[in-house]
Amino acid sequence: MEDARVEECEHDNSNTQEDAQVEESEQNNKDMEVAPALISVHPTRSSVAVAVGSDLRVFSLLDNCAVTLVDDSGGASHNDSIRCIKYGTNGKLFVSAGDDKLVKVWSTDCWRCISTVISEKRVSAVAISNDDLHVCFADKFGVVWVVDLPGFGGTEAPLNKKAAPLLAHYCSIITSLEFSPDGRFIVSADRDFKIRVTMFPTKPLDGAHEIQSFCLGHTEFVSCLAFICAPDSPQGLLVSGGGDSTVRMWDVISGTLLDTCEVGAKVEQVESDATEGKCSTVTDICTIPDCTLIAVAIQSLRGIMLLTCDLPSRTLSVTKVVSIIGENFVPTSLGSSISGGLLWMVTGASNLPCSDVSSLSRVKVISGCASEQEPVVLADTEIPGGAKLLEKLQGSMSIDEKVFLAAADAVKTAMCNLLIKKQYSDEKREFRKRTRNDKKGTQ
Image 1 (cartoon, rainbow, N blue to C red):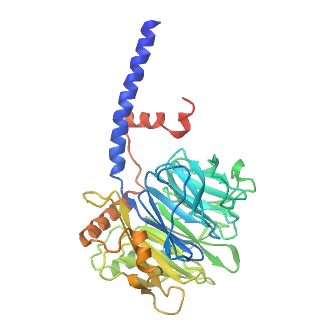
Image 2: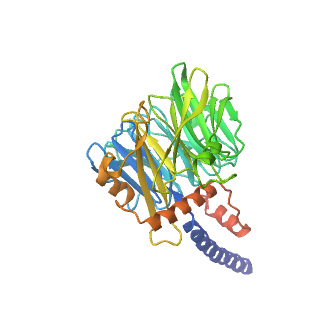
């Protein structure tokens, strides 16, 4: 018996040493992961948020000042790269989440964290129900989770809520989550070319078991989703972008593909240094409120592409390419609001390799997208909030050109690698199993 205990002790010590080595290796690899910068705009343009690395930066356009986040959990709000940020439909709630497996729900009235949810896996997408009663988030194992937030006014004590599984994509990374305009459906996209349309149940904590349709047609991973409001379709028309260099439009009721726009081919015509076969992944899509325009960010395009949706014929067409002149500005994220007719863009990344600057973000704004005027890229002095806003969201007004070029290259690499499935050794795989959040409490 004594020999057995000694052997067991030696085995545990061996595991501990091995775990320490693997953890150090994992951390070193994680430090090299470049995280693209993100932007989100309040529906009525009262504030703008940018996430770069673990840093969440918010600027109030109403008060014309930087926002101080209040998080009673202590320390930094996030301690690893933020991968998704989003305002709710009416702007009362804001959600941030990412690689630290924390989902933070914020009240935008006072910018206080009202709930922190611990995920079992890294978080890849978030969505807020139209009535603000539920927050959904997806992890890199392909599971969508839901948390209920009944009656939050922003003054209650923060709660550490427990999430319940809502639906699953069976081991495929979920890349995007969106609620339909009427709130009836939650739409999820994944790395394996699929888009799933699910009825959002009246009791979400019991799971979502009724699938409305699958939207199948992409030939590479689906990277982003958005809805266009249509008078004759309360649920709206779904648009999606992906690694196949296309933007597609769908009828979510039947899952029918309505039209496909080959945006990659257009990029090759516009970009003078574009070469055939160059990666033209659609990295983000943003619908412009009160019109049928869709802004598209494409990995190899220094600017954005505007598409028009013809509602009667249910077709998409390229309207214009708005180029950023004089800068190597390739947007990583887009945002717009109901009011103002402005399109907000950010480029940048964190964990920049071979640089003294750990993270960088650059904000640009285009006006005239929702009017008959020509879209114009605003000068820094013309952007709402001006120097104060840029100082907060970018970290500084001026950015060294060499650092900016290095960040642009890092962003391209990051966007290429974002959805590549990681390969782990047997040792790392066993370590990850032992340190999963959902296993810690049972050991």
